[in-house]
Length: 229
Image (cartoon, rainbow, N blue to C red; front, side, top):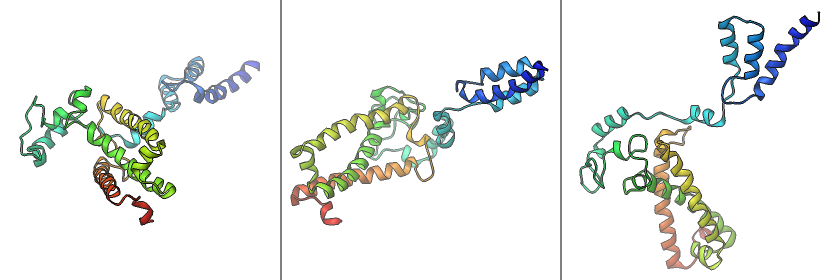
């Protein structure tokens, strides 16, 4: 009688304790329970496979990550006209300083050194500058409306803006460069409307807009966004 009561409570207890086990693999507790009761091998595999836990990184990867293969890069390199000639008219040459073929400058297939990533045609400069510009243009609109100061005054006259800027630049640069060092470009991520192409165009527009904002305020000596809203 006692043995049957123990058997009826052992399995639910194992199941309840499984989600608390390590996320690195299958629950060790569930392995112990099913093995001790001598369940068939195929049954144990099915039951153990259902008791799994995935980390945040694995979940995000499944939802947003796309694997970019070397074959896809080589095919685009051969068919895309913009990959056959740079904006300055030079033909990409293997091993050259600039321009390099796509297969050599991409984090997925090219060198993952900082020198390669931060080269003129590397993956890092435009990505980091574009993200900083997007954050900067939004920050400028909000801060100018709240303080009535130009971007220059917020950075240098008031001083607090410069502190935030110095703290923000290395943070965004670090967050941007880590995936590239792991062999992942911005094209490998997509979530709904948030694509690498959209980010590039928004970043380019933000860089032009932020530079235009600085030049305009230098001439009119007044914050632009206070007159727009």
